[in-house]
Amino acid sequence: MAMSPAPQVLVVAGSDSSGGAGIARDVETLCRFGLRAALAVTAVTAQTSRRVVAVEPMPPALVESQMRAALSAGCVRTVKLGMLGLTETADAVRAVLEDHPRTPVVIDPVLASTSGRRLLEGDAAAVYRRLFPLAALVTPNVPELGLLAGGPPAGDERGAIGQAKVLLAQGARAVLVKGGHASGADAADLLVTPEGVQRFVLPRLAVTLRGTGCALASGIAAQLALGRALPEAIALAKEWLHDLMAREGSPDGG
Ligand code: PLP
Image (cartoon, rainbow, N blue to C red):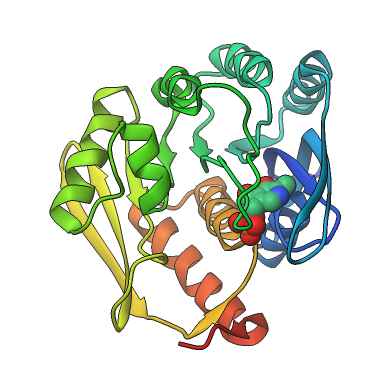
């Protein structure tokens, strides 16, 4: 009897040589949930845990070939977009995804490293606006949400919800605003959809860890690939990230 092929998540993202963020973190997360990764590498970066030393974008046509090859095998259940690097790469990614309209796409908007190096050239808000109609979920943190919605970082939940609605109006089906960069005893993420707002709250840990954005988006993509509904996928991925931070995070002085 033929075994059914293992479900995969197609990760479209950059490599971080330090292993802290990007594809290494994505693959680690997918393994944790028993899923295989298919990869489209958008850029190769040289990084230490403190700074970005070099960034080399891959040719957009090569990114497109990697995606089409991965999708042709028929095992990809969901797609996760991380660092895209170039406007031309984002356009190539969009062209491929438009040919696979039934595959859910989780978009982690990667604009810059924590150390401040830009990881997407060109007009980021315009680049992502063209991708949002393909998104089952977009996962910005508060500063990224401000940049994408065309305003300053939101100062409170009402402001964040208002900005998330701008992304919904641009075509995203759901927006998860990550509260990790805010302050307070709890780390609250807000899921904003046309139906309403749902809060996901866990105690805030006084630690930092690189690649948490990558891990959360990949965890959600993994859970969607396993057939979970979006709110459950978010809750499970958030719990896994909380455990990972408790195990591997370093004190941030908080
Ligand atoms: N490098 C790559 C390849 C990434 O994909 C990302 C984030 O997604 C980063 C760096 C930024 O990570 P951090 O914010 O932990 O510096």
